[in-house]
Image (cartoon, rainbow, N blue to C red; front, top):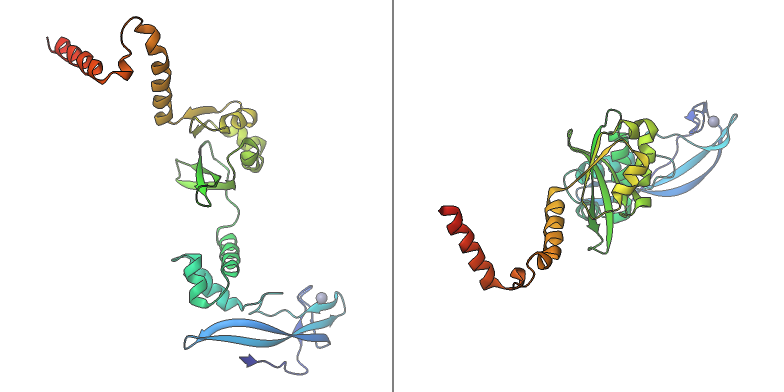
Length: 251
Ligand SMILES: [Zn+2]
């Protein structure tokens, strides 16, 4: 643990307006985690100053190395974010001895700063799919741009209302620009697409189309084979039919 003390009489910057002042309103000690030294955790006891700013009133002092209300130094947060880029949040949390949620927040803020808001201009084709989360108990939806191989949006749930925020984010112009939306056949996405993007073609996944075709033809097969054994239920008949077909094709 390292205790810091403020130097007296120096000009400090207000975190509200950026103006400098030497007047201190009050201070309270804060425990701040910093980078480890020789693999030992380091905690700083920082007298966090509130300045008597002529414009803002009592305001926290601006510090280059510590964000307002942060519990860890900026350089520790940057190290955590760098590690998160190559390993899981859990491993990064264990390595630095931090709470998993703290690490998650650090990683989230870093990604927000690094990537900024997603650019949806020029998107004309998208694909939507669901995936299981929380050990398959819940689902989430991902929207990707297949042509540029980008993830555009991820949201919890797979119902119509769950994917609505994406189309709201895309806006009326973006919705109008969409030419095609690819998706599975067993979702409610198509209804939402038709509502927001009536001019976009809904393209179903080939696997689901073939599977549906198989189910439909199986349902009508008994009517077409009236009076004959149900081929789908009789393996030996299926084999015989197949062999007859093969020999007919060969002759
Ligand atoms: Zn101020």
